[in-house]
Image (cartoon, rainbow, N blue to C red; front, side, top):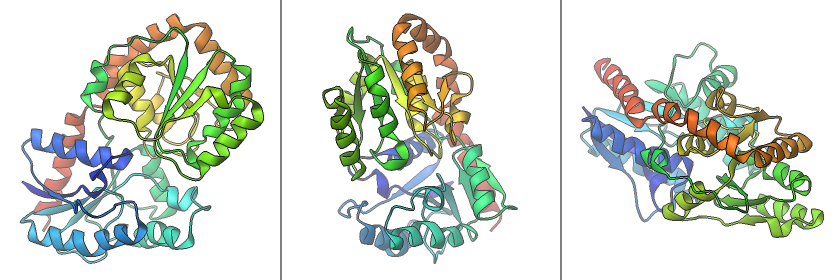
Length: 342
């Protein structure tokens, strides 16, 4: 089985979707799939014009020349003109739900135009039942959708926990409005013993976070580190008292899944796919209720040993639930169905 896989967002320092592409490629190869990585290393995947050039020109050209039987558009965007049957992963419907503050041309391309393109895919894959429901609500209520949870890197299951005596909470992911970091800033005055460390790239929303922290007098207890290396991130997972995931909208919720696999006590928002990922393994809080966040965090910090025991108890099951081998097997079955239908 030869599959052409879009891995352009794994170029450079990968965040959520780039990590998905990188780890899916490795898992597919481990499962015996011949993966042809499609990417342009010299092209900045984060510039809008470069992204469109990649999606609509370079990607379909590389796919046509790859010798593959199927193209997997794994970045959440797909070419409008294709020579191969195409599987698309729709990670979330954020561009149609919560990105109203972004530029109109970006909303049009990533939202309206891609929604039309999805209807022509040979198969649509969503990362969660939540995202599948969003797809049916916003694009095609009768669509056949395959739900395949992304895997979590096995290294998280091997992290040895050694929490710092002075507690800090870890928040991972892009610092943007839907990630809702302001909720934690508003909660910090009521949790004086805690620091918050954010690891992830900035958007202009970071300025609002810094301004609010200064206004509340907690600027010295919230640290926005930006990109960190894998070694630095693993060290933070080992040393943190807890992970906090206050997002208002997630198509899957890597931050929570990784915390569960790392044995890191976590608190997440009662929203979107986070409810599905958490199950009974992590407490959930209304994303807009800062006093509730403060109370939940304070209770966890006051009972750190008990929280760690609970995290240890669910860790093995989380590692099994989010195994890349499971995701790769499900994706391979989809590729074979699509290729066999031609």
